[in-house]
Amino acid sequence: MLESGPGDNHRLALERFQAAHPTLVAELDGLNPLAARARGETLAEYRAERLHEAFEAEAERLGLFAWELTLKLTSDSPEAFEAQRLEVHKEVAQMAGMSWADYCQLHDLPG
Image (cartoon, rainbow, N blue to C red; front, side, top):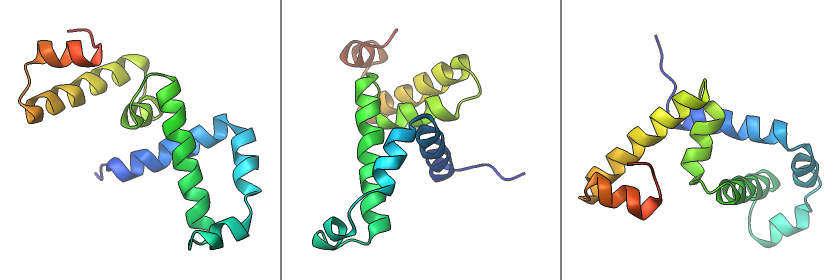
Protein backbone atom coordinates (compact mmCIF):
# COMPACT_ATOMS: atom_id res chain seq x y z
CA MET A 1 0.00 0.00 0.00
CA LEU A 2 1.35 3.42 -0.93
CA GLU A 3 1.35 6.13 1.69
CA SER A 4 0.96 9.74 0.76
CA GLY A 5 3.90 11.97 1.53
CA PRO A 6 4.02 15.49 2.92
CA GLY A 7 3.86 16.98 -0.57
CA ASP A 8 0.70 15.03 -1.37
CA ASN A 9 -0.91 16.19 1.87
CA HIS A 10 0.00 19.79 1.15
CA ARG A 11 -1.42 19.60 -2.38
CA LEU A 12 -4.65 18.15 -0.96
CA ALA A 13 -4.75 20.89 1.68
CA LEU A 14 -4.32 23.57 -1.00
CA GLU A 15 -7.15 22.01 -3.04
CA ARG A 16 -9.44 22.00 -0.01
CA PHE A 17 -8.37 25.53 0.91
CA GLN A 18 -9.26 26.77 -2.58
CA ALA A 19 -12.59 24.93 -2.53
CA ALA A 20 -13.47 26.76 0.68
CA HIS A 21 -12.38 30.16 -0.69
CA PRO A 22 -13.95 30.72 -4.13
CA THR A 23 -13.29 34.47 -3.98
CA LEU A 24 -9.58 33.78 -3.65
CA VAL A 25 -9.71 31.41 -6.62
CA ALA A 26 -11.37 34.15 -8.69
CA GLU A 27 -8.62 36.58 -7.67
CA LEU A 28 -5.92 34.06 -8.54
CA ASP A 29 -7.54 33.32 -11.88
CA GLY A 30 -7.58 37.06 -12.65
CA LEU A 31 -3.92 37.74 -11.93
CA ASN A 32 -2.16 39.94 -14.46
CA PRO A 33 0.34 37.99 -16.60
CA LEU A 34 2.42 41.17 -16.91
CA ALA A 35 2.94 41.21 -13.13
CA ALA A 36 4.24 37.65 -13.35
CA ARG A 37 6.54 38.51 -16.24
CA ALA A 38 7.87 41.56 -14.35
CA ARG A 39 8.93 39.17 -11.56
CA GLY A 40 10.53 36.78 -14.04
CA GLU A 41 7.92 34.11 -13.34
CA THR A 42 5.40 32.26 -15.42
CA LEU A 43 1.76 32.99 -14.65
CA ALA A 44 1.49 29.52 -13.05
CA GLU A 45 4.47 30.21 -10.78
CA TYR A 46 3.12 33.64 -9.86
CA ARG A 47 -0.32 32.17 -9.13
CA ALA A 48 1.18 29.38 -6.98
CA GLU A 49 3.16 31.93 -4.98
CA ARG A 50 0.05 34.05 -4.33
CA LEU A 51 -1.87 30.90 -3.31
CA HIS A 52 0.85 29.94 -0.82
CA GLU A 53 0.86 33.49 0.58
CA ALA A 54 -2.92 33.33 1.07
CA PHE A 55 -2.62 29.89 2.69
CA GLU A 56 0.05 31.12 5.09
CA ALA A 57 -2.00 34.23 5.90
CA GLU A 58 -5.01 32.04 6.70
CA ALA A 59 -2.89 29.85 8.96
CA GLU A 60 -1.60 32.93 10.76
CA ARG A 61 -5.14 34.29 11.10
CA LEU A 62 -6.12 31.00 12.75
CA GLY A 63 -3.08 31.07 15.04
CA LEU A 64 -1.51 28.08 13.28
CA PHE A 65 1.70 27.34 11.45
CA ALA A 66 1.15 26.58 7.75
CA TRP A 67 2.02 22.90 8.36
CA GLU A 68 -0.67 22.80 11.05
CA LEU A 69 -3.26 24.14 8.61
CA THR A 70 -2.15 21.44 6.16
CA LEU A 71 -2.75 18.82 8.87
CA LYS A 72 -6.09 20.36 9.80
CA LEU A 73 -7.33 20.31 6.21
CA THR A 74 -6.19 16.74 5.58
CA SER A 75 -6.99 15.02 8.90
CA ASP A 76 -9.92 12.65 9.16
CA SER A 77 -11.23 14.26 12.34
CA PRO A 78 -10.48 17.06 14.81
CA GLU A 79 -9.11 14.42 17.18
CA ALA A 80 -6.76 13.04 14.52
CA PHE A 81 -5.60 16.58 13.76
CA GLU A 82 -4.80 17.28 17.41
CA ALA A 83 -2.97 13.97 17.84
CA GLN A 84 -0.86 14.50 14.70
CA ARG A 85 -0.23 18.14 15.56
CA LEU A 86 1.06 17.33 19.03
CA GLU A 87 3.21 14.50 17.67
CA VAL A 88 4.93 16.84 15.20
CA HIS A 89 5.38 19.49 17.90
CA LYS A 90 6.99 16.85 20.15
CA GLU A 91 9.40 15.95 17.36
CA VAL A 92 10.28 19.62 16.86
CA ALA A 93 10.86 20.08 20.59
CA GLN A 94 13.20 17.08 20.59
CA MET A 95 15.11 18.36 17.56
CA ALA A 96 15.41 21.76 19.25
CA GLY A 97 16.69 20.12 22.43
CA MET A 98 13.90 21.68 24.48
CA SER A 99 11.92 20.12 27.26
CA TRP A 100 8.30 19.44 26.32
CA ALA A 101 7.09 21.75 29.12
CA ASP A 102 9.25 24.65 27.91
CA TYR A 103 8.22 24.05 24.29
CA CYS A 104 4.52 23.99 25.23
CA GLN A 105 4.88 27.23 27.14
CA LEU A 106 6.72 28.88 24.24
CA HIS A 107 4.07 27.83 21.69
CA ASP A 108 1.00 28.04 23.96
CA LEU A 109 0.27 24.32 23.69
CA PRO A 110 -1.45 22.13 26.26
CA GLY A 111 1.32 20.27 28.01
